[in-house]
Image (cartoon, rainbow, N blue to C red; front, side):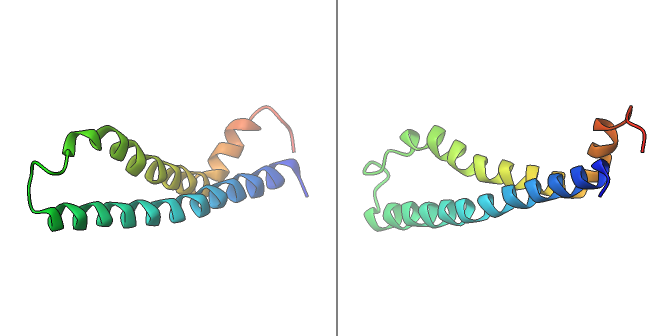
Length: 92
C-alpha cells in the first residue's frame, strides 16, 4: 500500500471515529435538554428555574458534539484533498 493510500484510509478512520464519538454525546445532550425542558414545564413558574445559569454551559455542551461530528464528516469527505496537501512534495 502506498503512503498516500494509507494516509487516506487513516484520515477516513479518524473521521469515522470522531463521528462515532459525537453521536452518543449528541444523544445525551438531547436527552438532558428534554429533561430540563420537562422539569421547567413541570415547575410552571419562570422564577423557579434559573435559565441564565445553564446558558453558557448548555451552549458548550450542545456545540461540542455537533462540532466533533461536523469535523468527522469533513475528514471523511475531504480526506483525498487533505492527503494531496500533506503529500504534495512527495513522489509516488
